[in-house]
Length: 94
Image (cartoon, rainbow, N blue to C red; front, top):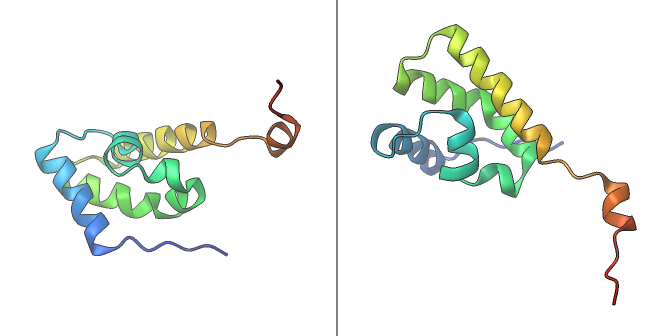
């Protein structure tokens, strides 16, 4: 099993993005600010609760907003999956 704990540096990047870079959504932080979603979608999903916790503290989000951000982030991460059959069947054609 893969488990990712957010490093203090990554946590600091999230807080900095919220405070100084106008990051307003979890997807913004995961995709644009840290690029984590493009590196490892499973790890991103595993650390999503902590990302939401940090952002909720910084942005003073309600529980309703946190649930909406979680839903949105999970929908976004679902788009990052590529069907393995597609990968194996796709070949370079000369």
